[in-house]
Image 1 (cartoon, rainbow, N blue to C red):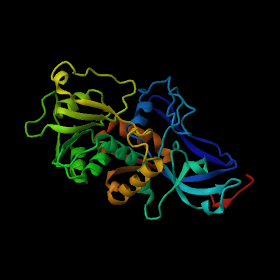
Image 2 (image 1 turned 180 degrees about the vertical axis):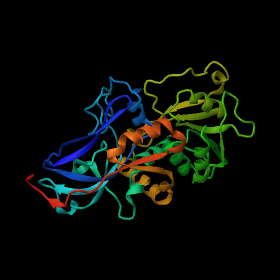
Image 3 (image 1 turned 120 degrees about the vertical axis):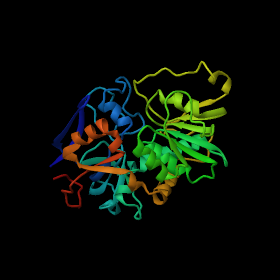
Image 4 (image 1 turned 135 degrees about the horizontal axis):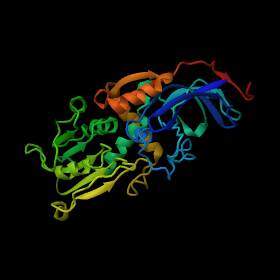
Length: 345
């Protein structure tokens, strides 16, 4: 039996390989993937050759931690599918269950049963696949700690930026401004709840945009930090959620910033701010993310679906036509019967 796996062989080179399908070990399940989501941020750094080669692809995820940035790279962290085969010592109730897993793009994968998350029955696969990005948005909001009546700005309206706007729109803010160079994304930000959606270049923010008490830099472009600085008022705070990889840009800290008392806050979803750790764990944060997926209409962010065999075209679209792509999904054709298996055929 075989599975199909997406491999980044070199910058801008995607192959889909057929390879032997391993049996689930004791305590594992074999999952047949229904859909997976391509990350237009981190994943594209590996696609474009912009990720550092000397660090783990993701030290916090079991499916990725054994890889570094050297090619070939298997990436992806948003797979939804059904449990098709049970390994030994796995309860029979798992068979046929729809689950989410932080796994690279593949038609099938084996995972420890405690590394997959049951998808709530009232959440469709197309919503569930947004779980990691929604968890990231929740983390950003927690790190920013928005206060009633604040002016908030979000720079970058990709998937994570739009989800962050969607969560922030539920707060009683004075204003919520989205910033992005692409008109279609600004329109999506308005639909997500932004009170204004603008674009400007240079260090002079539009006069009709209130100085932000809180700003987010989520564009993935290091020079956009200058945009966030230009938007932020005295003693404001900027949450930097982008991972820039090897990309660098000059940041203007020699002007008004020196006297501004602006705080720059690094945020990343693999850990939680120590101020929350006494009462929050991953399960609690996932619970909030699932709740947000129930209330926020994330399906409007899905712009394309490609069969996994056309994965190369999907990556090319994201890279070359960002104005037409927000969330791109890979789809998979079910091929196995759900069978409890303690001995692999």
